[in-house]
Image (cartoon, rainbow, N blue to C red; front, side, top):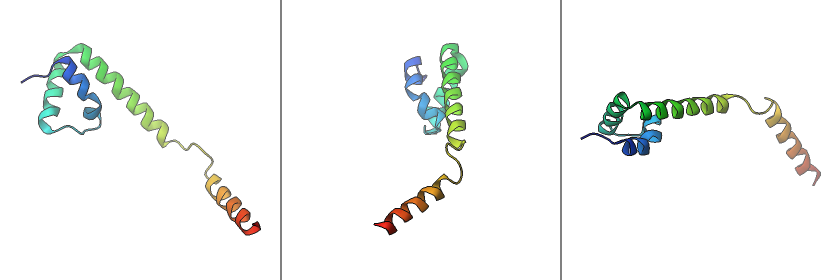
Length: 80
């Protein structure tokens, strides 16, 4: 059995997330090694995923923000 482009495309996200069975992974690997169009789509999707993962790791707020919020909430509760 071999995957078509459509079958491969439908599994790309799970493939990138390593959520496919061993057999499905092998079939996607085989298809990607022989299909330039799908290989390009895979590379694009992998690049987007890497970019998102890098952005998620970066702090989005100052390190002391959480403690400032907690202090502010504590002050509000004790004033009420």
